[in-house]
Image (cartoon, rainbow, N blue to C red; front, top):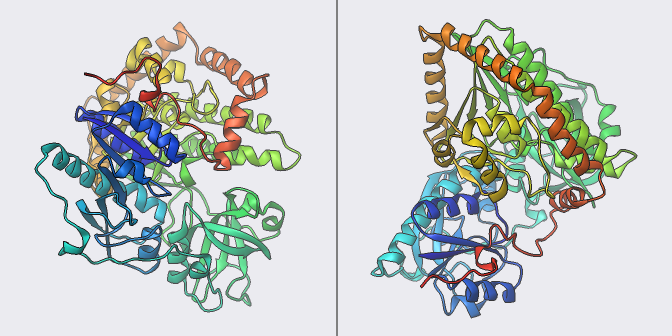
Length: 575
């Protein structure tokens, strides 16, 4: 079938559904829901058999849903209605939630039900739940709904006749509903409120007496700071986060957005103010036994070392790259035979930190200079990984990876990705950015010169299975996060115990020496950075314009041509 994905943005769910549907033989095209007239034009051009709306912020016009079956993905249980489905569920402490695929009609979220799926609702950030449980449930339900539509013998169930209705109509959650009372809210309540707003819109609050929105909370088990502190007081800082006292403990605030600005690490958004707080560093890279916030941690089991780096949204600033490189260099000296880079739960890495780079434009700094510093720090980190000779290195992707993060992962000997993970191994969407991280060395030797050109030119996301199929990845492992971690540990232990490990390492060193003799890594880096220098400092401002709009969440004005196949010149509906 021809299936049109009508969506507010090309987010992770839209990417996953597009890939899954294409993998099942459907012809998929994408249109951003910019205006009724634009959506109507897309339908007229593509003539879809079915329209699927995975992520919308407004209603589909009657001119479309009255003439075509439009399946809307709603992140709520059957009967749940309203734009703040996940927010209410998380903040209210629901134990189970789900996804419903319903047909668009005049009344929002009230159309007949085509499919649904449920899942246990863990205590976590809304953004994390969306990228994991919601995405998996939505994929299951949408594929079932598409099969039912294709069979042409299924009648969706009107909402009024559904036996499993448990949800109801809830309004848009307002900031008054999210407000934190630091004098009376305990830690669990504060966490639920910030988690329910994570990603967007954040919780309206104050830091250092300045109005802002806060995001990215983490509980602290050991109270730190002044003994006479009160609930609401800021206690200490650590790296990018600040610690705030609650009624019965404290929470780390990782990110904040000041009025008129954009989301930044809290200690950067309030750089001068947070500098006055006492510093509370952790000793070494070892994972702490107590519950605390720690963005880089290390643990060992037998002959395997596991390096974790939990960077918000997978963005890696110059300073974070430097700290991670130092941690990797330290881990390389440990008596282990395999090093596994675990990344974070939701993201492995998305490359350079565009928000921190954009922040340079707010003061006396230079976004071009910070871009240059950041990409060089990423390159230093990638080279540290490429030149690891005494261990087999593994990039274990439990979460998504994009741009330079994909090639940082490919700098490892092996790439294992969890089923359900999406990879975007390309750069051009960010203002025609050329990219670095030694991709011109790493990519062709895995997928060939033509395959590398296709990946960079087509700019399409890859599923974990798709990455393995083309040679970019080495294994697609269990989709359940806990099962994935168990499988990674088992496979890594098998490598560490392999009787031919010494020969594997010798072969690895010989291959690296041959590659270096043929063309040094420094040459690849110099060539890549010559392009990047033009991106950052040249006459064409495309990268800076694209970054500005990305960071400030500007609304899309059109759908990129590589997504909207129906807008290609000469495209015709197949007969």
